[in-house]
Length: 273
Image 1 (cartoon, rainbow, N blue to C red):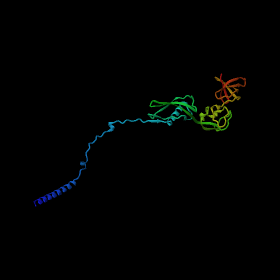
Image 2 (tube, rainbow, N blue to C red):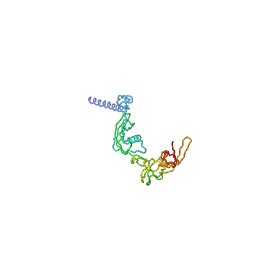
Image 3 (cartoon, helix red, strand yellow):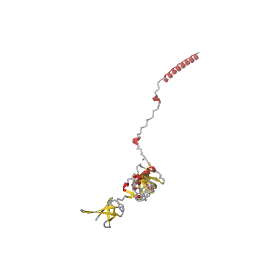
Image 4 (cartoon, rainbow, N blue to C red):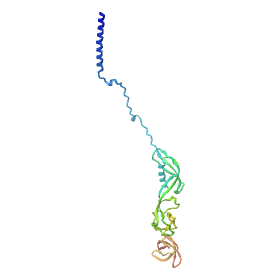
């Protein structure tokens, strides 16, 4: 009987303790949680200012010199060297590989041009300089053209014919294909005549024209001789054509003697004592 009473007491005591523990555990779960307390605090790393503590090395910008850059510079040098009158066009007859330079600022100098005049085909030696130093030297064969306006005959024109713009066309032509000098369209044609016959459609060359004579062979002219206040005038016959200020032979019609006289007008010559 006593044993039963002791067991009952123990059971009741355990029940009371268990109920108390359950209530205490539930209250502890309802306590607000501080998140910062759950995160493990790490030591803060020092901030490094790379702009101050380290210098960034600047890499120089490279420049590639191509054939498209080279040709205009080479053309300008040729125009200056040969005093080209017209539009010069050049075409490389050999490939040229681009060159890498440390700077986009460069210059070209011609070192060798064996021909004294510009021709249709020419071998040019040149060097490239950048930042005051020679980058390299090359030789390049070129085909050249010089385009300019020229006079071209509309029809056959005979020797001695007067020249007028109405008898000529003005065309743009590669003058390096013509072996002789071309007459510039700026020339005053009225002062010239044809020195030889020119076929239709031909460019007018300097050798084709000659200054128009003021006095013709066989023409009777006035011969003037003056010295101090004395002036003598007589008639004479021209023995040859004469342009202005040229000296020609004149035959005195009275004495039949030949004298030298200077052409000063279209029907007058002057004799000097």
